[in-house]
Image 1 (tube, helix red, strand yellow):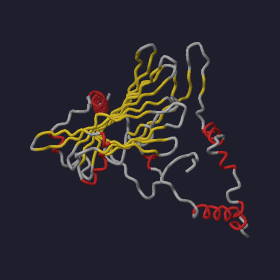
Image 2: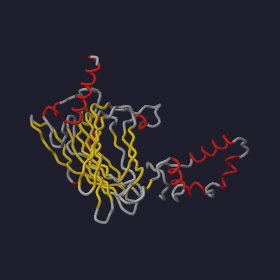
Image 3: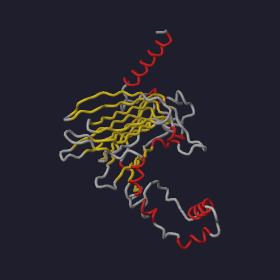
Image 4: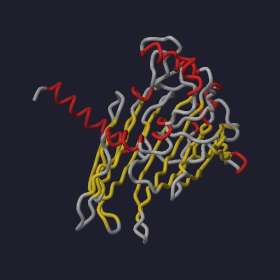
Amino acid sequence: MQLNTLKIILFTTLFTVNVFSQKYELGEVTIDELKEKVHPIDSSAVAAVLFKKGETRFNLDTEGNWTILTEIKYKIKIYKKEGLDYANKVVAYYVGGFRNETLNFKNEVTYNLVNGKVEKTKLKSDGEFKEDITEDYKSKKITMPQVKEGSIVEYSYTLKSPYINTFNDWYFQGDIPYNHVEYDVYLPEYFKYRSVITGYEKVNIQDRAITTGSFQEQKYTYAIDNVPSLKEESNIINIDNYTSILKYELASINYPNQPIKNIAITWDDVVKSIYESDYFGSELKSKSYFEDDLNTIIGDLKTNNEKIAAIFSFVKNRMTWNQKYGVYTMME
């Protein structure tokens, strides 16, 4: 083996061990971290995620119902006044099904350097807000106290969901630098998921089989250091196409002594389910909205492209966006 090749292998091994071996916990803020004036790699950064750490586990209750519990911890450094908004966090959760998701924040603390000492300010109840996004979605928001240039904020939240077909995408990257990101996923032996990581950053992955409770799990650990910020640009339609994101989707369920149950995993299945929905497909079938206007809109236009452009312009000029995103229709 050539010397250069050996050096590369040793460097890669040491880097991987370093990524997985360090411990990142809330509450361990140092004076040196608070004194830091600029990000060591990106001097233009207005803020940075010092670490983002998460864990997703599956729980089975006595009635045979599965829930997914995800806990995420953040430690964020504010460098400039333009970065003060990164001390706030909004998380949405689903409440439109037969079983609702629940969301709870905790461990919310702001750290400042005052007279050479670390000063802690905990978030009070008036710093947390709830909002109705739609009939099916709500959100909780925290606004951290006593935040200024140089502050470090920490918080965590847990999301409990009864919907095992998919769980929230995990972002390794954002519009500010991420110093360290780590995510543990514990998958029960009964569930087979398809996973994919988008973007261009190299994420280190480890997996091993473990036994907890009455069933076996496969533990996957994803980790990465020094992730650069990714900014929106005018010629990019969807920045998520370039962002490092982990996505999971349930492919099949295989309980003991039962046949394998395949879950809808193709685009054809997705399209079919959406078009069969009363809140999507049935709305597209409705023709009564603009029947009286249609003849006037189309007029003497001959080609389909001309007709499409005229109809699009008519609808666009009569729409007002409610500042909410969604796939399905809802009544306002």
